[in-house]
Image (cartoon, rainbow, N blue to C red; front, top):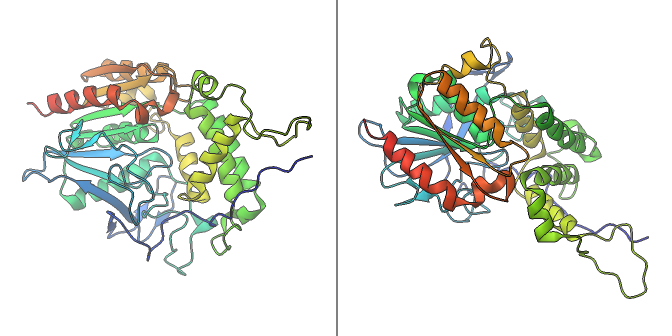
Length: 393
């Protein structure tokens, strides 16, 4: 029986570490301890962020971009030392583009719990200088947003012109508008939900189990492991599971069909580990993530997404969403199987019921959840028009 394909050794973590090239990142260290929603307090919290454009004298042109699960602060810009890949929304942000950096001051921060400069499990614990690892607490989307609010204070932004993001980024967008309604002029939540559903939680649970069962995860304390010694395989499997939910059945079928990637010589029997093309695609994405992400951050952020519920502590979904006063552009994707479009229609209806102005745009794409990162020709024009309209009195 043939063996499964071999993979090159991976780092114990793909987290950015102090001492490595910082690229375009800036770092803000919160001056006070940071209390989390579930009662734990973190000290010496750092938020990594990037900016583009110039802040207006009255600070009225600031736009906050909120990234998705495995994103970071590098929303646009070339790959360079400190940034192994181009920006995750490259082509949408820049001079004259949908999010026009000649007009707007654009900010994107790595979320709390992340692994690309903001405080997360790979960061040094202030007590002993060793990585938090298993000691890092559970966080929520609200915690991420409250850390961003501290950054906004530091930047002199009392009110965002707009807060924009998809997936996990869209969860942050909604929390911004609900937690700080007076600090948000408009919002663009894309391919997201007001509450994580049981099926969304189920997908996350499978990924977490894959990491936990990797013996090299070591309960979350693996940062001293040599290359090839960390929980890279569990993280890669978790990413493979998620990647299936990011695309649609039609895209997988059209692109890969039932083609076999590892062909056998004529007359040889089919091997158990002979891969289909779709398996090779999933292997590629799993291996790619391991190079730039941290397994513990994947767990922590994924748990925050599963805990996402705007109704928590707010007497229900409708009262929570009624707090939104900002102009809203809600965007959904026709083929999204992870965050089905009915969830974005629900967001639109709840905002409208609360009395705030809201528009809806459907992205007609076969690409599934990732369409907001792929079909920029459908995302860009309505976002550009909405931001310009929102700038008018």
